[in-house]
Image 1 (cartoon, rainbow, N blue to C red):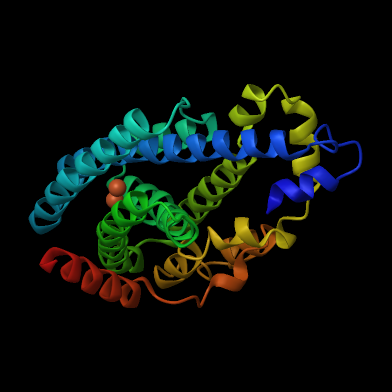
Image 2 (spheres, rainbow, N blue to C red; image 1 turned 135 degrees about the vertical axis):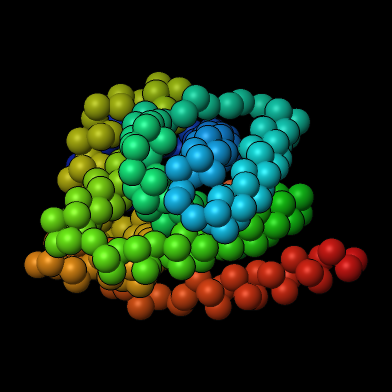
Length: 282
Ligand SMILES: [Fe+2]
Ligand SMILES: [Fe+2]
């Protein structure tokens, strides 16, 4: 867990934490994560509504329209969970806000697609999966399972839609997409610090940021795992090695390139779908 690393770092403001502080941190961190899930889903709702307008193929518009309905349901479920089950909420993290603003305001349909379906949803799928494995709260476990089944389908559709389109782009157009993917990945990595949680706990955010940035990302397994969907999907789109391999080098620099051949979203989607069907028959 990265917090333990931050605690052990020299001069850490949390080096003297005891059970009380850790319990408080766990509660706040949980509220923060569920809040960011809800904000991310709101972004997905807006982005997919935009995709309905901008994607050039009618079949893709039909699909995106069904995704709008899925995302509205996800916003609703996380918002209700926050209101009814969690004592505190958090505003949107500024790294996530900046990324969502860029994704939604870009006039190129494929950038909205790449940003939302591949990057944000890929990370969300990994984050939901990790919370699903760790939580023992039955309601949260069940609702995450249903949402993951939807998200896996959204990510898979994003890959299928972009794969062909990216084969037709020029090297310089592909480089723009590679840079966008790298920038999005870095901003998502910036979220991991959970600045708003430290602020609320009265811990010096600047001190914690400094220590966080000194950590070697390749030693943080949890943080790396969150890229286990994004890196293989960028590979499927041909973005890792196109041109001079810009994105492969960038992901290697972030310590996440080892996920390039991680289990495919298609297989995972298949197994999630089976679970959702089983539940529906209960
Ligand atoms: Fe969603
Ligand atoms: Fe989604």
